[in-house]
Length: 157
Image (cartoon, rainbow, N blue to C red; front, side, top):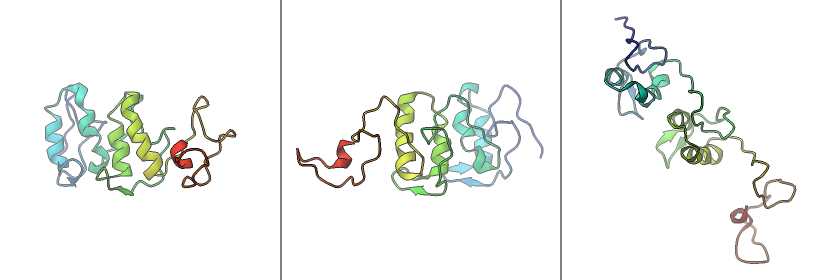
């Protein structure tokens, strides 16, 4: 049936359209798209992003809200969307959707770290950041030990 969510209610799809397949099971949500759509109707309007993050899995067009966290520090798309990150139990694509729920910088840092180390995101340290190499180039071998102390180059950078 063709149904458009009322203006004052949440919807899985940001454009308030129907989910494409209500029977589609969304592993990360632990429920079907139809169940998500039903749950969305009872959410307060300021909590819609909690279900909208699963919109792309339900066939909705999804746009990351302005000011939201991104998986890649520079806001670009990750290069390995289907890569499964064991530690999180999610793919890089799902993590990028999860990140978009958050807005505070301190909440974004963990997503950025996963994005750079697991999902192929680019990272350029800010100009004020300290680097081990004076020319700001990356350490060539993070496993080499330096003469002073017992830290590896990777631990010092």
